[in-house]
Length: 121
Image (tube, rainbow, N blue to C red):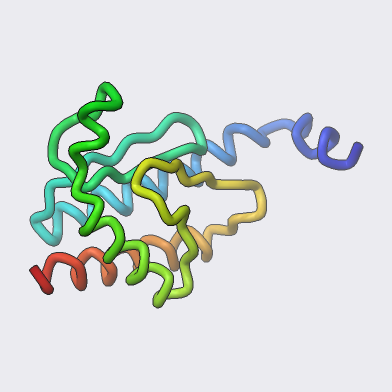
């Protein structure tokens, strides 16, 4: 019941949207700074970073993503203390438990992980 009460609080979903938008903007800024073209997509608090430059609109395109680069990114993020779903084809989620500091740390870790993955190529 407590969960339902929290979900019903004014501004709950707007706050979740703001957190997700901040994370997305930070990841996009990191890609721009590093000159990396990946496809970042988000709906509400659910997001995915595809390791390919073009927009993904179907399963066939998704399977064309560079899963080797994603695997290196997954491990680089884990080394940074950020746990992601281990498959290129799974979404990530922002929750009410994530703080602004968590988002900032994730954006910073994303920069270092992307830098590592693409520096090693």
